Amino acid sequence: MRVAIWCSVALLCGELALCIPVLAAAPDWQASVDAKAQKIIDQHRAVGLVIGLLHTDGRRETFAYGHTRADAGTPDAQTIFEIGSITKTMTTLVLAELVTRGELTLDTPVKSLLPADYKVPRRGDREITLLDLATHTSGLPNNPPSIIARLIKDPKVQLNPFAAFDETALRDDLGQVSIEPQSTWPVTYSNFGMGLLGYALCRKTGLGYEAMIRQFIGEPLQLPDTHLTGTDEQRARRTTGHTSDLQPCPDWDFQDTSAGAGAIRSTLTDMLQYLAVQCGQVETTLRPAMRLAQEQRYDALGVGHIGLGWFLLPGPDQTTVFTHNGGTNGQATYAAYCMEPRVGVVVLCNTACPAANDLLGSIGARLIRELISAEIAAGNR
Image 1 (tube, one colour):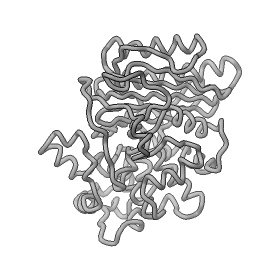
Image 2 (tube, helix red, strand yellow):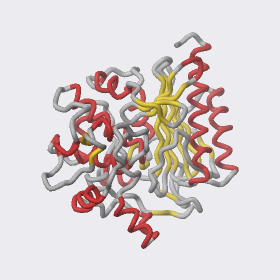
Image 3 (cartoon, helix red, strand yellow):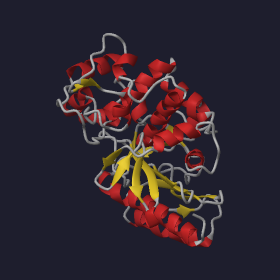
């Protein structure tokens, strides 16, 4: 997530000066990952980077390059990154779980979950629903109007754009937004909409966003380092974010009104566990909710589809790749997995650079395709 919190299925960034694997890896995958990461090193586009591979036999290989910051050591699988818009897949998983429990429906109007004085724009003759928000088909703009207005007046707002976006700002922005009166909307990426979904779910559950993610996802899926603010010990493990010119920049902060769009922090270890559960390697009570979130809903991006949060893209040999990326002002991320064969890839980078978005995303996209093809060739589909 950046402002405009990144949404392409490729991903961002990178430079590095060191290339040190966190764990011993099979020589073939070590060479393949090193060769791809070397581009980021050679092009001086990032300060630090970690990559994780999830294999069908349950092995999880991790690789690390560069530094957590200029004067510090190499990141590792326990280093905490801002995962940006991958957060959206957790917001929509909470929604899917509440739907499978019978506490909500996808057709529930978001207005019914908000304070009475909130005016929500309509989509033609009907209300915006939770499904509209979860699939980016609400017609809401990418980012809240008040944040865009503040950015125009002061570009430094980019350093922490969502910190001041409180309930009053959300109410006022919803009141001034209008949507074209059409019955259906194409997939139009909206941080505003996904942040609104997260806030509505907080209202429904009576929990703050961090507590909601911990209760619904972190604890059931065993993701101890997946959080918003974290403990003192977790804050000490955070990597520093860096801008495109490799300068350190502040962390991003969120209130419940926007957290659902990109507030989560996590580690490579937790993210590989998250994908292992998503692809079915690890069983969970959330399996029905995950199946609901994985259902193909609408055409998206011109090359694939969208489910609840996840983008569904064609993979090798008629497979489907579930993917999402993210970017904040100083960090960039990519996650992808396949159900058949059950494999996954995570890329976490502590540098953000719009020009390198395709570079970092292409590393993840190429690795997931290579993993799928290798497993199919080995008869592991």
